[in-house]
Length: 211
Image (cartoon, rainbow, N blue to C red; front, side, top):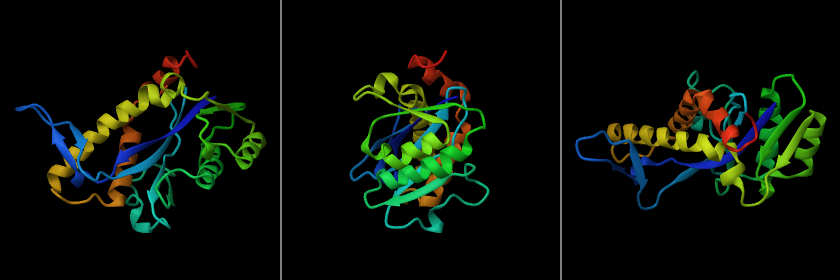
């Protein structure tokens, strides 16, 4: 089995965005306004269209219960973390890799996981976990994500388009209100759940990794 994982940022405060669109047509996109706020989300999928639980990284010292998606509405086994700047850190990645990614894998082996060579993704601990679980890590060469990273080639574009639509819908119903973290978590889970497996597979095909 072949998997790919990568992070991307999603606007998490629609009160600081602007709705744009053509007159007479529904607005379906947002553009960042002054002082935008983004939240990092790690996504992971396979070449056959399976989805791993996403990881949401909030800015803060701790993950609070009120930041989690409402019970029953979250993507199964969605994972949360908090860091000082809201970005990925080595410990956060290691915990996700061990406690979320590995646990969601089917029993079939071997497994190949592809991701970029950011320093937070590469540690002795992660390599040991991979070896223990018959997982091979393939690090993408520098500056090649736009041609070799399946998530970048098809998945994130689709996710961002649908995320913009979610923000527009929220903004219309909650003018000037900052989106609570638990609603952000729920909506991220919603767009990931709704993603067509064919979109996931197409990224691997475009990257020349899988046909």
